[in-house]
Image 1 (cartoon, rainbow, N blue to C red):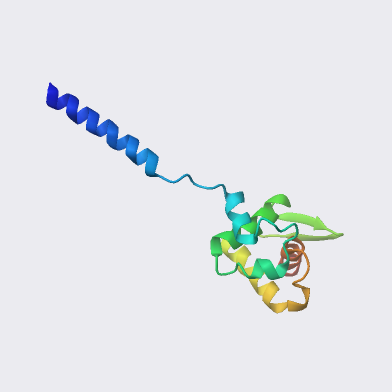
Image 2: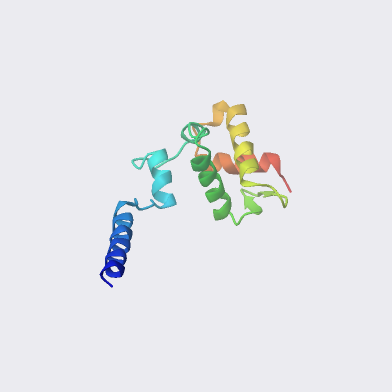
Length: 125
């Protein structure tokens, strides 16, 4: 009986130690703010392009803009883009990277504006 109690106590103690040593996962928003700089009020295309090698952070930003625009169709300043079914988040990120690299004279503009411009060019309705 004593050995059973000892095993139970050891198991309970190891679970407590594991729970205490596991780091808490930061929120996606906090993670992205750390990458972009939490002191930033305005994210430019230059700052977004600097994230292109951090694929997760870059895709989080692009998908966040698309999500805000209701995903596949968005009317922006009288123009509309329509993203076809099957476009992946990776493709979406690639479209934005290509647009930012091909239009360096526009990169001082808002990153959200440039994400929309990239999709307007790639997928006009």
